[in-house]
Length: 296
Image (cartoon, rainbow, N blue to C red; front, side, top):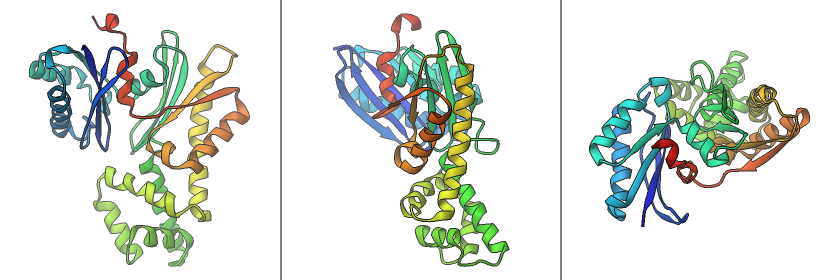
């Protein structure tokens, strides 16, 4: 049975799936981080790991294609290098695209729509016929508004504002110390500067779970939702049609932080006629919508 391997290689982990031509899921595999801009060598190792796992579960000669959406690969300009390495390693046709493009394939195939990704970072992509649009996705130093890293950074910034006002038991300070098990603000701030981007981003889910009734945390989420909504509105204005545009929200933040998701949807719906769609499961399934004839 012929099959394809799809891989979603993101900032915190790599997810891979093998799909038969009839749409049957044949197997899954996962590994550690896969951002080729930030973790170049580790990305190669983790991509190899998941591919080997799936090939060992199925017949190697029946694999038609390996399609990997690799975070950071477009910015780092190393998609060709990754393709060449994996082709040489496995002797199977390989196509490397960005993780965002893979998510677009998962959500819309080749149809028009807007894709909003808020995971570790964030980006808004648009697709209208042959035209492709992009807003955001400029990394944690220049952008990534509404992503997990951005949310956590804003929370810590709010804590420093409370400390500047001598509010050592302020609402945000209390939330960070309690939720993240820090003894003091000094310990938390020191840890922030020593953690990796991924480690900082991982705190967003914990803060969201324990900050649902914290007004300062809600204000941070409101700012992030507003910025994401503004980017979506800018994207909507690029489309030529007046018909409702489908918008897919995906990424760990929009999956697990329902407050942010709902506020984004509310703000966008107030200004545009849109239809929100839900993406379930791994974006690795985008390989099912990839047209092999375009590759050949």
